[in-house]
Image (cartoon, rainbow, N blue to C red; front, side, top):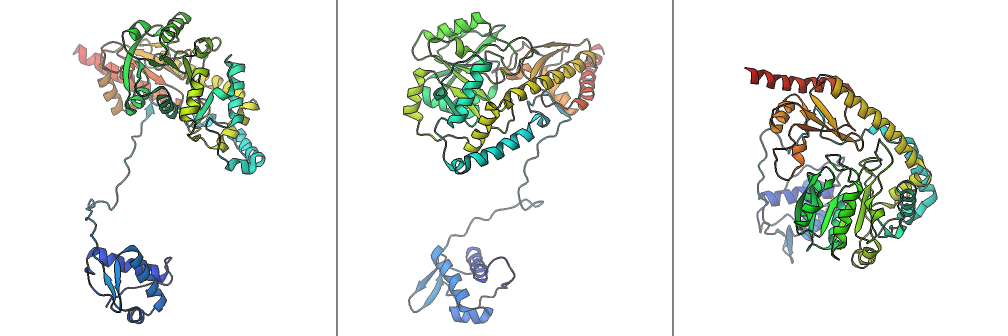
Length: 472
């Protein structure tokens, strides 16, 4: 006879407990295929529960196929394949998540300082959005994004970047990574895409994951080499002319014009202008976008609010030239917008009411001060006389060329032993190169300043150890 302990105070109902107990006995093999179950009345009396409890349990087992009924004979166990036995590690019954390494100081991460986020203003605008939009928040946004946000973005670009853009040309998406996918769908997987070398490795990884051909084009002191680009077969080139990562190069007008001429030579050539951190320029006026100087409609402009507001604000946008806009509507207009309307309306208010402009002003001042403090520690601290700083006029990183003969990999290994995570310029090349060694990419936006002096002492110790070993 089936004997189970059923608890009335358990969160599960009695019939659910009984169903689960019988199911486990079937799966474990304790109840064999073809074995007859007790009648509902008999089992109810044995377990001291109501007949309806047994009836409900049997019916659930019957519905899921664990048992079957034979007319006038009762219920029998069905033939059920037993699940494979899973062996658990002796020390733990469940897998433990892999723990991220904790660094004393991380020079490689481009994390934003959470203290800079405008929590008070953002919270107030969210409440306004709820009150004003009401049930409108529940409606899906148009495929290209909420009209209010697109109008606000167009207004901002006109006022602060000198770009005249129709809001209909703007496509809003959840991060630039998603927009890269959309561009591939738009321009075609049969195209070959060129990327900068060195450059941000994730861009090439996204193209390769979409199974498109990727070619790597070198850069010089003026940015991507158009003469080298011409030796490749690429039809689409992805660049960051306003501020290249990681070298910090700003593409001059002559190179820009050369690149635009390359694009205009054939009908299937396009330039993807990634303007990811153009807002953070600390010397002179903002650099005009390539899009604003293009007369042949060959430039697709991309930007994001992840760098200027917060990484969790996954709102990016691209601007399509009119020649591509109709193709996008026809071929990709069926896609739903990937950003919630709630966040789009809130961001629209943030832009319209001037909060974004004021926020950027504060961010520039704070990051300029932080950059100066970090550079001061490099130039006048333990590394004084053994470091050269370049690329500090824009963006949230700079380059620090170290006077050392240690190979980059060895320098990184020794630094890691002391809790320091280093990003070297050589890491950003597609293939390892002997040139540009010993150059540290300092992403300073998220650095903890109180840890910096000690971290630089560790670096200085490593370089002194190298000198001692060489002398001996």
